[in-house]
Amino acid sequence: MDLLNHLHLSSGFKVSESGPVGVGLIGAGNISDAYLSNLIKFPDVRVLFVADLDLEKAASQAKKYQILKHGSVADLLADPEIELVINLTVPAAHVKIGLQAIAAGKHIWAEKPFAIDRTGGDQLSTAASSANLKLSVAPDTFLGAGLQTAFRAIKTGEIGKPLSALALFQVEGPESWHPNPEFFYQHGGGPLLDMGPYYLTALAKIFGTAVKVTATSAKSRSERDFGAGPNRGGKFAVTIPTQFSALIEYAGGGSALIILSFDSTINRAGFLEVTGETGVAVLPDPNNFNGETVIHKTDGVKITLPAIGLTYGRGTGALDLAQSIRLNRNEQVPGELAFHVFDLMLSIQESAKNGQSVYLKSTFNTPAELPIEWDPVVKTLF
Image (cartoon, rainbow, N blue to C red):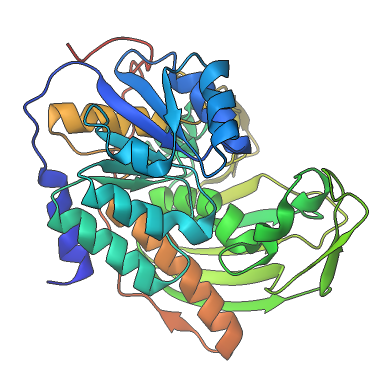
């Protein structure tokens, strides 16, 4: 059975349990604060455990958010109360930890990227579907009020049929603020795999399945300087490209030009613009959950659409996944969507490396927009 069939079959999972879903979080690094500060507010999940290779770090985060259990990954996976694992480890560990969680009978919400190569992505997806477990991968920013408002406006014809898009993420790089930035510049990192998922997932929601990509890449220097943390003033190696430019063509006839860079002294992060038959939509930053959408009509009329809906930030997708487990419904961030975006990023890498266009085979079904009234802090599981 091929990967795509495995992914489609994974949505059929059923459970008999009731009440909030027990959650365990693996990885107590920087991003865990963003997740935990939200998850503890959501009544449909119970955060029961924080695990990390650094046991002191796990204990510190558990104490900070009043979570009763902390310890090793093995301890977390052995806990029968935990149904859903949130995997916040570094990219190179995503598949290894994911496979361990699946073997322990846990559903998975993982930070992006899906994996660091197709072999790992295939192993993870096949294992999850074979075990009849759900697998979702960030980002969940497109569930925020900002992009959801933009999607609704485009879907209802505010700019006519979408024809093309321009997406820009151009910054100097995360070493200026991140205390341990090395993994951003090693296999599995870089601006494409780190930031690409936000832009490419938003574009997938608008244009659907990508079928062809033509790309280039570059690396500005072989070393970078630590700008923060205990190694500030030192240097570390850069082993991967730090800029990508790609032209993406979609099955429905649209196209998108995307530039992702850690090499720019001019900050152009968060730019996403969609041109349609009757206007242009400037969308909010796809790395955020909020922000307005500005419509520029061909007749000169400019319309500003404030974000309508609720915004709680990271962890929203994990909550939706938890609810889908209990209610036996499709999740908003299905594995097939996450895999298609992952496949597209690897295709961009391959096109840039080989100097040839790459044709994609993966597909997905576009999830519907969230109901405006959906509220993460309303209890729905009893």
